[in-house]
Each structure stands twice: as C-alpha cells, then as structure tokens.
Length: 317
Ligand code: TXA
Ligand code: MG
Image (cartoon, helix red, strand yellow):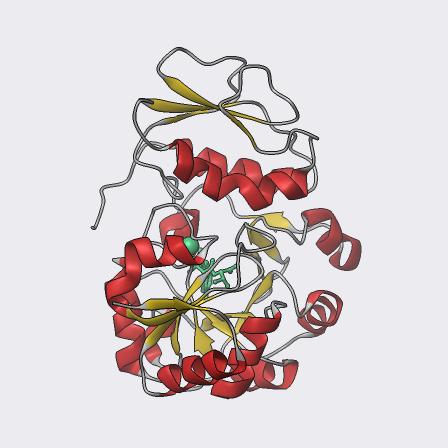
C-alpha cells in the first residue's frame, strides 16, 4: 500500500526515482493533486488510464519544469508565449500544436495538440526538476468523480496504483487549472480556473468559450457529468430540505457547511471539493448548494458545481 510521505528532500528524490522507473505517484500541485507518470513511458501512461478508468479518447496534461522544456513538446505562437510569460509557473494549461514523438502516443489520445502546464507548487517543481522529463498528470481521482485536494483523497481512491503520495497539505487553489486552446484562432477557453477569463482576455482580447456541442471529442473533461459525488447535487438552493446537506457561501443561514463565511471566492475554491466529499454521506440524501457569485473565480466554481449536478454519465468503475 502506498504511503503518504511529507515532501522532504529524500521523499522528493524517491518520488522522482519512482517516476523514472515508470511508476505512478500522487503529486501535489497548487490546483489539485495529480496522478503522475512519465509522459515518455507508454506503459506508465497506460497505467494512468487504467487507474482512473479514464476513457481512451481523453488526453492528459503534460507537466514541465520550465518554458524551454515546454517548447520541446509543442509549438508556441506569440499568444502562447505571452500567456506563458504572464502566468507560468501557475494554474494555467495551454493546448498547443504538439511536436511529434515528444511524449508517448497515448498522452495526446490521438490528437495533434498537447496540453502543457508549468505548475507553481514548489514541491511539484522540485519533483519535475529531479525527474528531468515531461510528466503526465491528470487529477488524482477516478474518472468523473470529485478531484483530490488532499493526500488522503488520493490514497482513498488510488492507493493501489501509486508508489507513493507526496503529502504537501491541502492544495492552495483547490480547482483544476484554466485550460486555453491556442492551437486555433480565436483562442478558446476549454476549462475555467484560477487564471480568470478576464486575466486572459486582458492579454489576448476576447476569447471563445467551448460550446456545449461535440464536447466529448473536444475535451472530455468538459463532458457534462464530472466532479460528481455519489449523492445528487441541487444548485442555487435558497434553502435545504430536512434530508439534504446544505452547502453555503458567504454566511448562508442554516448551512451544514459554508464554503467561505466571509464570502471570499478564493477560499470557497480551496474548500469546494473537500466540502462536497464531506457532505456526501448519510444521513443526507442529496447536497443542496446556495447561489455563488459568477464573477472572477466564481466562473470556475460554478462550472464545477454545474457538472457535479449534471445527469450522471455511466460509471466506468
Ligand atoms: O490543474 C490541473 O490541470 C490538474 C493538475 C494535476 O495539474 N490536472 C488536471 O488534469 O486537471 P485532468 O486530466 O483532470 O484534466 C485535463 C483536462 C481534461 O479536460 C482534458 O480533456 C483536457 O485537459 N485536455 C488535455 N489535453 C487536451 C488537448 N490536447 N486538447 C484539449 N483538451 C485537452
Ligand atoms: Mg480531472
């Protein structure tokens, strides 16, 4: 069974060694924990898909330790360089035309683009530097389920599959990276995150948003049901019934749990996934969620909640 270990220098070296040997690890990042494997190792990539029960057509994000490494994997246009220089290291993923054979074929799931991210978390960066190779890391949750923001969330679902989970505490952002597709014009927001639409549009001008049609092929993380607790989720709830847990925001009266009593969206983002997990239990039969503002980080929070509440896709595991 995989142990959660504190990110000592020795643990970071062991984590890098495990990756180099083709094993998977639980990797802390500033957004969520990743299920990490060597992106150049086809067997490691297959293990990631198997562990998550991830559909074969849903490509993985590759993590790198600097811009030079990123540029060996994909072609950066001026817009991509602008975003990378402004927001890397940080919670932003760029989808770019990929260079052939830079990573194992299944990482890109047959696409001619590659999603790349340079994380800001110091432990992630130390492991990436020590491993000295591109590292694929989807969020460390079974496909379609709630993302992992703590080491114990990774262990709970994936301990059989990882050599170790590096425990750097709760993820400081708590929501997955913003994903922007720059392989096309105009650029397109595929997933809202902590780098807000406004921050990106301040540099690029107006960008498109992935429409709801044909999404399963475009970016399966955008499939309707995702981030799903076992219990149904009801949104924009002004009150909860007796058998519902009530997830509040900004001091909601009668809340079972409040994402941010002070009404701070960053705090709410940090708490969201752990809150959904903790309310997904008896005696509650459903989770009602109070309205949450849609501006700034609220776009990402509402996106995750909408998918958590969406009609459920059939489970693969
Ligand atoms: O914050 C994050 O991005 C976390 C941490 C661990 O880095 N990772 C993460 O990975 O959220 P994952 O696999 O859960 O989400 C990746 C998303 C999926 O929606 C996937 O479909 C999309 O990125 N994606 C990956 N490659 C793509 C590509 N070439 N074109 C379009 N979308 C892509
Ligand atoms: Mg995910």
